Length: 167
Image 1: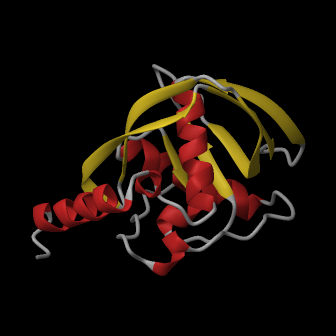
Image 2: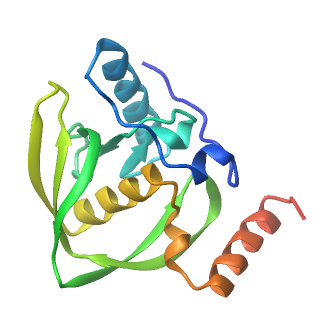
C-alpha cells in the first residue's frame, strides 16, 4: 500500500480524541494496510490513525520478532489492566529524536473490532501490552509524554525541538 507521513507534534489532531469506527469497510482495511507499511518503515511496534492525520479510532500493533503478525484494531478499549507494572522506553515519530521511560500495566485485556468487524477480546502482555496502551492513548488525544511530570514533559519537547533545529 503506502507509507504515510506522521504529523509533527503539536498538531491539533494529536491532541483530540478520535471518532469511533461504525463498520469495517474496504476503506478501513486499506488504511490499516497503509498504517502497517508506515509502522514497518519507522520501524515501530504500533501506530494509531491519528498519527498520520486520520481522526478515527484505528490502531495496528506488531511486536512479533519476524513481523507480519499485526493486530488490526478499531475502537480498542482496555477492559482489564494488571496491577503489575512494567517500565519501557517509549517514543513517537510525531516527536522525533527523544524518548522516555514510561511505566504501564504489564498485561491488559482489550476489546476491539477486528479486521472482520467482529468484536474481539484479547490479552496482551509485556511489549504487546505497552504498545497497545500507547496506541489507545493516541486515540484519546494523549501522547506517551503526558504520563510524565509537567517539567519532564516540557524538557522532552524542548529537547526534540532543539535536536530538530527548531529553536
